Image (cartoon, rainbow, N blue to C red; front, side):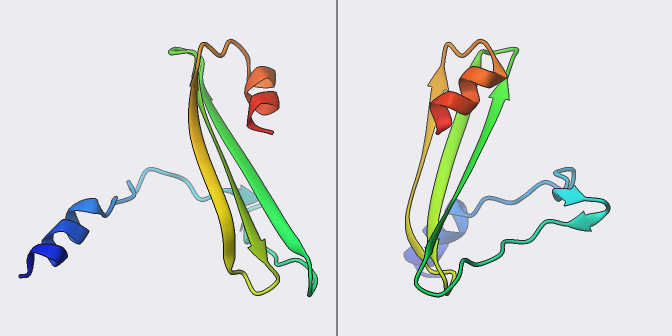
Length: 89
């Protein structure tokens, strides 16, 4: 196996089977694209009350689903879910 292939395989993150798929009324959530000519930006965050840390991310995609830009960041010293939501936006 070439070194590049080995490196790539080592960078792959395996999802744990215990991570649930987000659902509403028993149906999996799916991304819906914006109207032609528009861009859609999805934002997400998570918070650990135990460690007072959170993570936030956003992803902008065009009407074809092509990722245009994205970012993610970890924050520390976060004391509430409301603060997490405000910081992420």
